[in-house]
Picture (tube, rainbow over the protein chains, first blue to last red):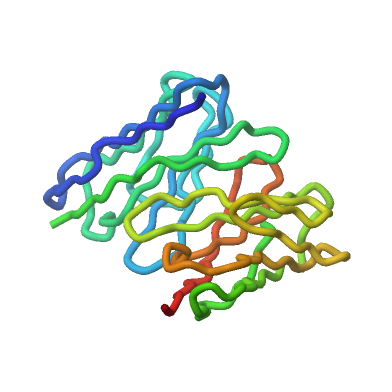
Length: 113
Length: 109
């Protein structure tokens, strides 16, 4: 069966510090991968999605970047965090075919001080 | 991008049915209709999906309008554990999956 792992679960970082959030998927090949952010309140903002290694689509201009060095690995990074980067970051995967059901990770809570 | 519209919030009484509506008037022929729900401080979880026909699973039922421009998620007997934010999204396998604000469902005992 497929599993998705996301870490760290919580993170408190000072403004201007770097960020790295990692997401891995096991038990499937060539998944679509997604990073979403949920700020205070509701609504999930799509940040990046990837349909294959090295293929990253950015949805929102910001100081974040994403990389997919392995088929099963999706990394969200920042060189210098802003206060506005605080939020709940969610990684998800889907098969990219058929009904394309999304499966989400447990999320990473980032607080920038 | 295909877009969905949902009421901001709804209330239900425990053990009564709940009908959560979603409008998606710009749906294309290849878009699946997906529903997810999110409990506080957790990632969203898949509930149900459909293309044209009504669907049932152990969690809920999905009723899709004949013109596919709207759908309704039906919880047959709401429990306190069903209190969550429910999201309706259109999924066309293209990778760009956009979530709206969802409907916050509260369930009263």
